[in-house]
Image (cartoon, rainbow, N blue to C red; front, side, top):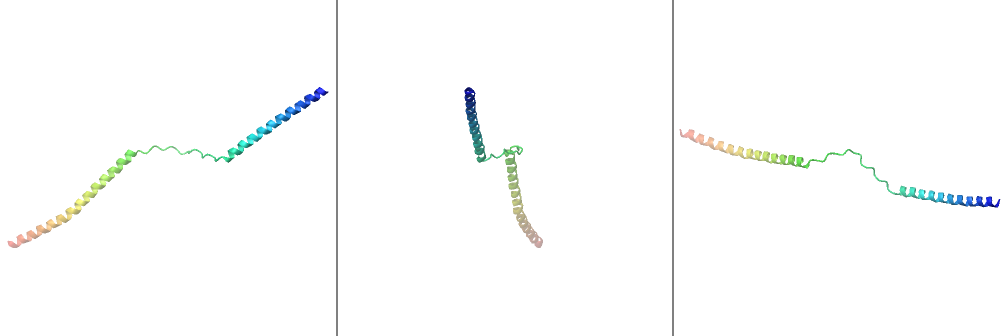
Length: 105
């Protein structure tokens, strides 16, 4: 009976060691869960569809064409603005000369 008692006692001691190990593992897992909860959560990756890159050369060409066209149009309007008074002055001088010519006859 003494032998059975010593076997039961050693089994009980071993079980208590196992339960202490389980308690330690439980504490470690709880500590990890708390540490993860304390860390800031990462933002989820962007789920938008990827857009094609912008063709910069195309837009620079369009901008340059618009600028050159605008300057050409401005110069054309400037030429009309200068030519109109010149033509008017020329016509007034010619009319005056024509009247003088008609009076001499």
